[in-house]
Image (cartoon, rainbow, N blue to C red; front, side, top):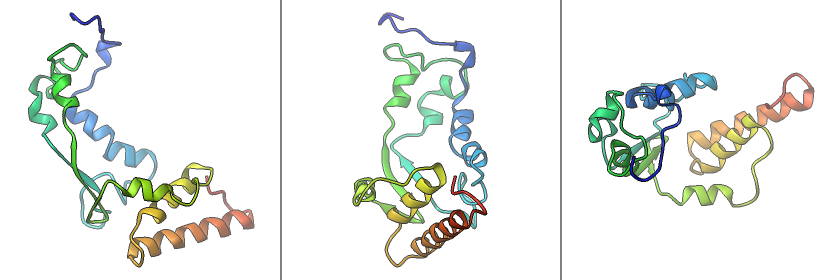
Length: 154
């Protein structure tokens, strides 16, 4: 590579379809939320991103797991890195990018993974929506369980 970049552990590369599975269905399974998120299916939250390009066709050599994406100039990785997010859909509704800033208004999230997830979902769901009702109930249940000593919010 002419820019001095090198690939760390080239044998550990994964094909694009596998990488996409790792950050969607596999990630949902690892945190125990695969019945709610991770794939587009009836009964799950309709949360997904609309991309500016198709990662499977923009870099066919990388999509097939044949290389590319090594960091050199003009390689398949450049095409992948150029893909942006056109829109985000959460709970079946297109959301604007300002939701992240609104979520942080009014303080920091509580400590702990699950408490933070519930806090974020409650803060970013629309007032009066089913999602807001649901996350408020989950938050209340977590508080009751942790104060009774039966379970922890972690």
